[in-house]
Amino acid sequence: MQQWWSSTAAWRLLSCPLSAVPANEPARPSAQDLGNAGSVAHLALQQWIENVEWAREDPGMRLQGRFDEIVASRGIDIARMPQAVITRARLRSRGKELSAILAGAGTGIRTELLLTDEANHLFGILDVAAGGAQGLIIDLKTGRYDSGQPSQAVKHQMTFYAHLFKVTFGIPPKHVIVFNLQQGPAEIEVSPSAITNLLGDVRMAQSKGRTLARPQPDVCRFCTKRIICEPHWKAVAAWDPPDAIEGTIVSIERSSSGMVAVSIDGHWLTGIVGSQLPDDAKPGQFARAVRVRRRSPGTEPPEWAASSITEIRVLPAS
Picture (tube, rainbow, N blue to C red):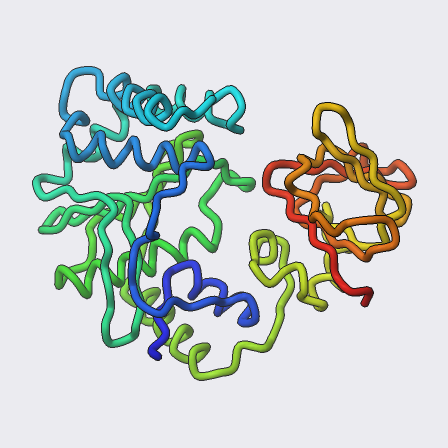
């Protein structure tokens, strides 16, 4: 079966081949997961554009209204969804700025556009795109950049999308924009040579095996193979800050509210929702937890805090 590569999978292929997971075919997700504020914001943007509300009076208020309608229809409590309240506010404050960008794109603005490169088996889903002489790509981001600027991963993504746009429309996009709700729009310069280099790198990586691991914090953070990747576990303790712990479960404490605390090699991991802890977890088992935060750095022994994105797994002792 032919393997297809999304922007994210291609980035992983280039950064850490072991973490790369290609798709069997180019396709949108089967169901839209609205488990976080970013996914709600993307759906609100899609509806706002499809209903041409960006061209009406007070576009920011209308964009925020779309967010509210989605939240209400799905029964989402934004007070309990991280970053939802601030994301809602930023949609309104940035709506007019986003509307002005769309106004310069001309006609044919489309959202959630699936584009493919059949020759190289690449595909991507663009948040916003407009063809023609004023070709435009916009990718919405709801999280901040640590450095204040789009990361190399984001620049890779936009170069990848610019290539797909050119394959589809015959010309490169005139504007390639990352629109960050917190920091505003940033135009990414995508040169022909950048696209050529990207394609060459991807082809070369595709021709090699995917057994090499190159542990890096930004690549490993959401890697599906992270729990069982031994090179990652050898590297993570030296990261600043580390976000993973492993060891033998010493004890498990449960509160009446359903929260759980686990002592792993004498280091307490607190803030665990009951459903995050495997049913077979018990003292004496070997456990690993990823996407955790160290409390009060410098204290010994370290204490850790879990969050909604923490994953805990019980494994055979290594």
